[in-house]
Length: 137
Image 1 (tube, rainbow, N blue to C red):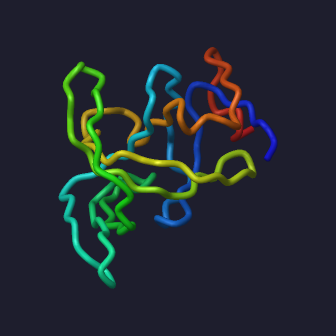
Image 2: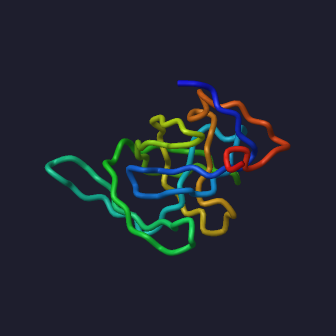
């Protein structure tokens, strides 16, 4: 996989969740990546734990998605509080490349970007913090 150069925000897709061209904040200060989620419900599918939640499409409409549950862990939020969050594993597609990432599910309703990409998911990324939407041009 080649290294891609991104700005401080870009558009990316989560094809396994059916989400295309989602605005994403690239946050080198965050360790974990996060996706906006509300109404989170854990259930079993063939004796495997899954999670169903509502998120927002790039057009701003509420959508319901499901994913296999990967983990539940404690994460320090931007305001310093420790929160227990569900974690899913999915594919991220940006700049013509695709790779597996882990996403914590959190209510980002008040945030401008409904997805935040943290350092753990940036192995193939070089960030130019004064630029934005480099992949769109």
